[in-house]
Image (cartoon, rainbow, N blue to C red; front, side):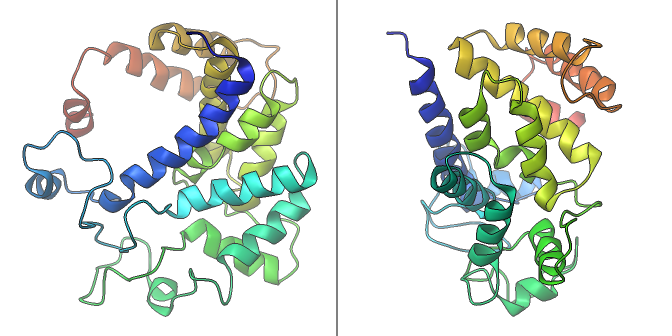
Length: 259
């Protein structure tokens, strides 16, 4: 049975939330050999119990900091009947800021790629580096609140609600860029996020489609000189998408280990 565009918009938002919660208990296990020891030969590893997250431990089924950013965005879009960056910023600060469950001294003191002590994993959600930077800038009253150095996957993980809200509209990419730059004001983040937005929008507007066709369509968009929101880094993203196509018949773990 085919689905409507509106149903696929809802599916994109719900799917993003479910996927985030499903991966949260195994989140940030960077050493694949250690991860293999945890999961063994099991193939169904979604919603893993007990949590094996080395950084933070919260109940299985809950959202990570990525999913919570998407939730705050969805809440703002619904309340404002569209994107309002001021409202989104205020809600982000309130949700992740002082007095929230994200307010934790061990997390605050942790530095990028620092060693984990016996005090980890913490028993509350993890406040991301880009969120920490955003809070500092927001408290100073700065208009530029996004980190220029954080290049983590927040730029992809949180955008489903705004892509769903504006899919098929000419200003969709501009809205996504505005959302990303609130916490990550880097062209690298924006280029990656807009590429992901183009992929998600294709599925929302067209439904189930072979991945190869979707990627080829996005490559065509990124090489169109008249495309919306052009960035110098688009050429690099085209190269990465070609690598995805070339690796499509290889096991994912093999690609991650060797590439």
